[in-house]
Length: 468
Image (cartoon, rainbow, N blue to C red; front, side):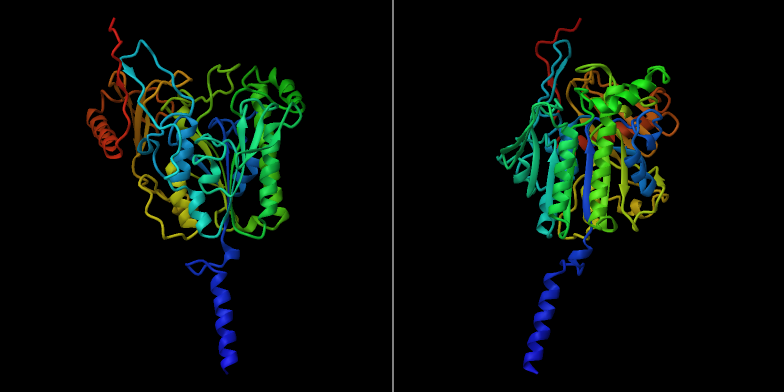
């Protein structure tokens, strides 16, 4: 009897080792594959109405899952939006409000850009660190842009990623770049291996290495960020179609997106190969809006009917594609009008993984219920933007808040307020601030109060400014 009791105790101990603190079997923990494009516009995918660019693999994800029509990045440029995704904190709270190399000023402006933190501090807890503590293998592949890609405290390896393959040099040159792991060069290209394809190779490798364990893969393509350097074999189709479209798209940009779509297809194939599709949450999105002006070459994309583009707090700079696919958990061929923002990913993933031992995200709101009932309206509450800088894309220092149908924009140089009803005016052409003064004041006060609460870094007075 004593031997049998010992055996039962041993079996129970082994069972407990194989479960999480919430009684969820390790084998049933869903994997997370988070795929992010760089500067992909809201209107650039077939599933979002683009008739010119071929994106069959991403479109298939949308068909098999949930498509968001009102998803937002937390900032109109990349580093802040990435920080928000990984920490659940707003860039304004982190004071990480511009991209790493951003330092543009305007001598003719009455203000100087706000002082800001250039890297994500190692003291911040990332989604990777959280899930790693709960038994997940973690991998980061691609563009980091939150600090040094090498082996210091701001690198992916120090922020919870056990596997890292980081673009470390010449990230804008798709045939002349370096990839590092833990700060050491593991690959250097001199015109042979297309960068988008190489990143996909590493993503596939990570899945293959961790197929028997729960994992979180953070795959951040550099495409279709300028410079516009496509694979030559992708171009003929788009050149052939260019005249028929009357020049309504950029062939090089389109070919770059198609290569990224190929990569998405390869990732899905690898998941299927290892029978992981039934237990994987797959997300595809962009870090911010597309680029709608010539920068390092011809204009990449047209974001109409949205106003402006990357670097602006208008819809073209912050509204992004978002697709979430989770077989058996998310109904196929669905879409939602519920709006979410970048800070909301972390609490949503923690809900999906049933992780309850983390403090609530100060700025994020879980949209897990939207995944389950996309047609059900959810009051997410207000979402905010704070960009106290001069962008490389002609954006000026500004802030914004959306709550319900209404969005208020505040221009920091002049203090001017603009109010738009996005349900009736997605193009933000009809400024309602004069006709709806009470709504304007309500949202302006809300934005000001929020900036105070998060201790947002504000622009400073330009002492050399001379008013004309």
